[in-house]
Every structure is written in structure tokens, then in C-alpha cells.
Image (cartoon, rainbow, N blue to C red; front, side, top):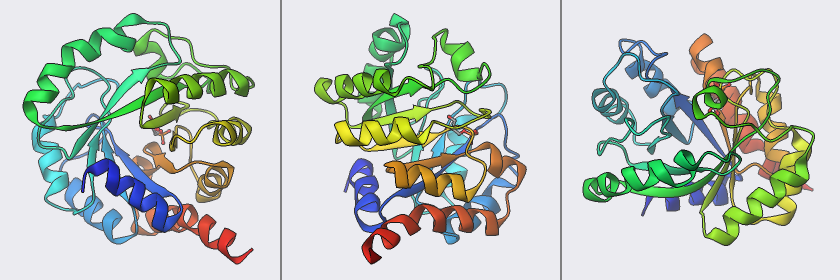
Length: 254
Ligand code: 1GP
């Protein structure tokens, strides 16, 4: 089973999936094994790995460390061309479709494609949209693109449809790490109504109730990063996982 198939299976069986983002610059490698084991046991569905910069740790070693402590998928969410590692299970092959920066629409992909092909890493074609978040996020600054205004869901829908017609497999709507406010429910609802592509939603989600609202609106996967860096407790991961998985259950009852 490919990693994409595993993700889609999670969506099918649990209604939606809960993914935890591990940023190599923001974690303490000494604490990583216990956190990964705890998060796996607490009901997370997978790990994303990546960040806007790469100031410190070596990514191959860190991904190996994550993988040796979990059986869940470990997927690279690359902040740059330097975040490609054959050790991971897959990489989100991102096109920053909300922006108009050719480097992030085709330039970096052309550079990365032969490396990814040679490594045998599974590439999951993903339409990545930055959504306005109340402040300039690292992703916005580093990509040199403007996010989609948060009160313009129709613009987001048109981007989602373009991704679908191009043949992409996933959408990732990101308010950016540490966003003041997350991707609005109305935007998620509208995209879910018009496009069949599974949606990953992340950025600025700090409590389980908000995660639940995103799934109710139509998210297939919810990502948190910053909150887990601030509070790595097992109980918090469990609360998020239960919130994300509870929606299908609630729907089944109705
Ligand atoms: C950012 O979606 C991720 O790309 C996670 O965001 O760190 O705000 O949880 P946070």
C-alpha cells in the first residue's frame, strides 16, 4: 500500500486524519523518540516533517529517529529543496498554487524531480495554498508570495478546481505555522462542496475544538505543529486525535 493509499484509508475508516508536524529547527532530538511513541499511542495518524528554514539538525537522522519510534507514515512537507530524504515514506510534492512565483510553481519541482525519482521516494502531488493569517508567516515571507485573503473563499475554490483539473491528489490549505487565526470554516466548506480532492488543513490550530470544526467543515486531515512544541503531553495529542476522529462518528449517529 502506498502512503497516499494509507492516508486515504485513514480518511475512509476514521472520517478524517490527525497529522503532527515536526519542524527540524524546533525540536529537541533528545525528546523526539518519547514524543513520537506517545503521539502514536495517543491516536495520531501520521507525521509531517519539514520547516521553512533548516538551521540546525540533520534531516536524515531525525527522520530515521522518528521512523524507528513509530509505524505511522512519516511524510516530508518540504520547506525547501534541501528537505528531500529517501528515509521518509513519502514527500508532499508541493506546487504553491496560491502564489505567482514561478520558482514554487515549476522551477523547484524541475530541480527536485530527478532527485526524488532516483531516491525512489513516493511523491504525492499536492496543491498548496497559503491563506491569509493575520500576520506575515514564515511560509509567506520565504516563498515571496501573497496568501489568498481569508474572506475570499471563491478564489480558494477556483484554485482548488484548477488543482483538481491539473490532476493533483491532495490540497493543503495552510494559514502558516503560528498563524493568528486558522483557515476559515467557510472556505473549507465551499471547497468541499465543489472539489473532491482531500483537504489538509493547518496553521494556527491550537485546540481540539477548532480541529473538530475544521473536519466538520470538510477537512480530510488536520495538522498541528506549534501547539505540540509548546505542550508535548500525551493527553493533548489524544484530545486532538479524538476530536478529529469524532466527526464521522457523530455523523453516523445522525
Ligand atoms: C504549518 O500547518 C502547519 O504549515 C502547522 O501550523 O504550527 O500553527 O500548528 P501550526
